Amino acid sequence: MLCEERFSEIYGKDPEGLSFSPYRICPIGAHSDHNLGKITGLAINYGIHFAYRPKKNGVVEVTSLQFPGRAQWHIREVPPKPGDWADYLRGATWALSKKHPLSLGICGVFEGSLPIGGLSSSAAVILAFLSALAAVNRIRLAPQELIDIAYDAEKNYVGINVGTLDQSCEVLSRKDHLLYLDCRDNRYELIPCAFKKPYQIAIFFSGLEHSLAGSKYNMRVDELRAGVYALQAFSGYEYGKFKDANARDVSWSVYQAYKDRLPEPWAKRCEHWYTEFQRVEAGAEAWRRGDLEEYGRLSFESGWSSIHNWESGAPEQIRLYEIMRETDGIYGGRFSGAGFKGCCMALIDPEKADSIRGHVGRAYLSDFPHLEGKYSFHLCESADGVAYVQEGTL
Image 1 (tube, rainbow, N blue to C red):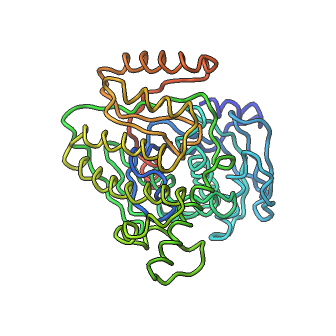
Image 2: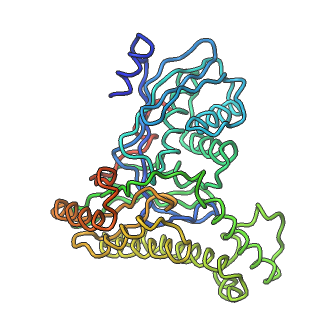
Image 3: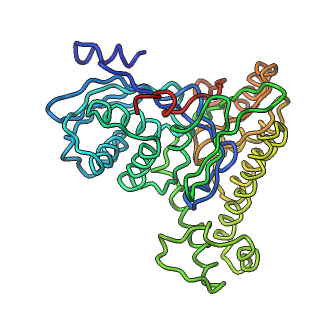
C-alpha cells in the first residue's frame, strides 16, 4: 500500500499495523437514518487504509495521501475543531476517550482507494482510525460500540446531523448480503443474495468533491424535523424539544391527514422520509425473493425522490442520474451519500459493463466537458464490513 511506503519515508521505520474500513453504498434508505428510519446498504471492496504505529507520549500525528498537511493533538487534550480534514479523527479521539482510558497515542498515514465523495469516506476514515487507536491501547470494541463511538464523533464533535447508516453499513455488512437495518433499535438482518443473475456495483464519480459540512445537509434534516414538529402539534401529539422530534414517532396516517398544512419545503422533506421508509421495506423483500429488477426500480425511485422531495444533488449529479436511467444494463441507482456533489451508484449487468462505461461517460462529458479527467467510472463488488474484516480482533 502507498500509505505504508509513505509512512516509512516519514518515520524511517515500517508501520506496525494496517487498519481498513470499506466504503458503503445505500441503494434505498437515503435521508432516513437521522429520523430513526430503516435502510438497506452494502459495503464495497474499496475503502480507507491507515498505516500506523503507537506513540508512547500520547500524541496523535496523522497524514493523508489525499489532503495536505500533518495534524497533531494529544489524546487527553483534543482541541475544539479547527475545520480541517482531521476533524473527524479529533472527534474519534474525543469520543473514544469518553468511553475508555487512553494511554498511547498513534502516528499514521491514510490512503483512500476511490475519489472522495458520496461513499461515506468520512465514516470510513473514523472507523479505520478508531480500530487502530483502540488496538494500540488494547481496547476491544464490540461492533455496536464501534458504530456508536464513530457516530458520536461525527455528530457531536464535527457537528453533522448524521444517523447511523454509514457506520452500520461499514461495520456490519457481509459480502453477498444486504444489510437491512432499523435505526430506531439497531436491529438488523443480513439478507443473502438470491438473484438468479449476476450483478456488479458501478460508481460514477461526478468530478465534484463532496463535503457534508459545507452542504445543505443539516438544513434538510432541520426542515424534516420542523415538518414533524408541526405534525405533532396539528395532531395533538405530546411533544418536547425540537431536537428530539423525529419522523418515526409520527404515523403515516397522521402525515396524510395534516401534510397539506405544512409549508412546501417541510412537506417535501416529510414526503421523502415516509415514502423512503416504504421503499426500504419493499426493497428488502425484493432482495429476499431475488427480484433484482424490482430492487433496482425502487432504487431509481429513491433517487427521483431525493431530487424532487429532498431537493439534493448538484446539476452534474442530477444529469448523471438521468443518464443512468436511460442506459441499457443498469437495473437501478441513485446519488450515493447525501447527494451534495460526490457520485452516483448503480447495480448493473456485468456483461454490459463496458458499454455502460462508454455510454455514460460520453453522455456526461458531452454536457460537462470541463470535467474531463475528473469524472471517473469504477466497478466494485460487495464486501465484508469492519466487524468481519477484523473478525477476532474487535
